[in-house]
Image (tube, rainbow, N blue to C red; front, side, top):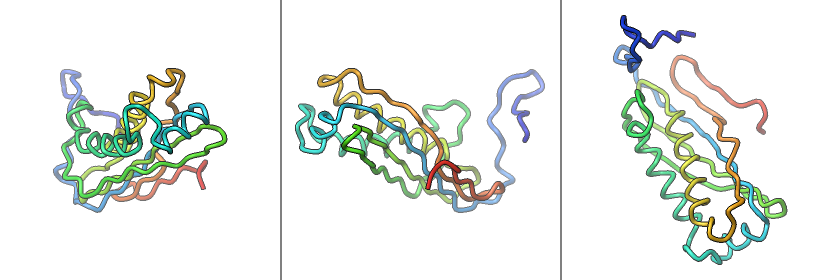
Length: 160
C-alpha cells in the first residue's frame, strides 16, 4: 500500500486520480443503532413526536453521501449516480441498522460516501428520538462491500 500522500514539505495532498480510468464503483456501508425495543416500536408506528424518523433519516443519508467531499478533507468530489438508504431491524433487541449503498462511474471509490450516508442516517435517527431516549447508541460504522477499481471486490467476512 502507498501511504505517501504528502508533498515535499510534508503537507497532506489530495491523491491525484487523473491518470486512472473511470469504472463503475459501488460501496455499501452500515451504522448500527441500539435502542429500547419500545422506542423502535414507536418509530415503526409513527409514535415519535418529530414525525417520520426513517423517512427523514433516509433523506439525510442520501444528502450526506452527496456532500461527502464538503465534509471530509481531501476527498474527491464525485458525480454520484445512485444512493439508497435502507434499514434492517431486530424488534426484540431494539437494534436498527442503517445501510447506505452508493454507485458512481468514477476514477476513485465511493466507500467514504457510503460510510458518510450510513453515519448521518444514524445520527438523524438519534436526533429525532433523543427527546424520547437519550441512551440510544450508535456504533459499528463499517464498510460492508465495495467493487470497482484496481483493488476489485471487497466483502466483509463477518457478514452473510
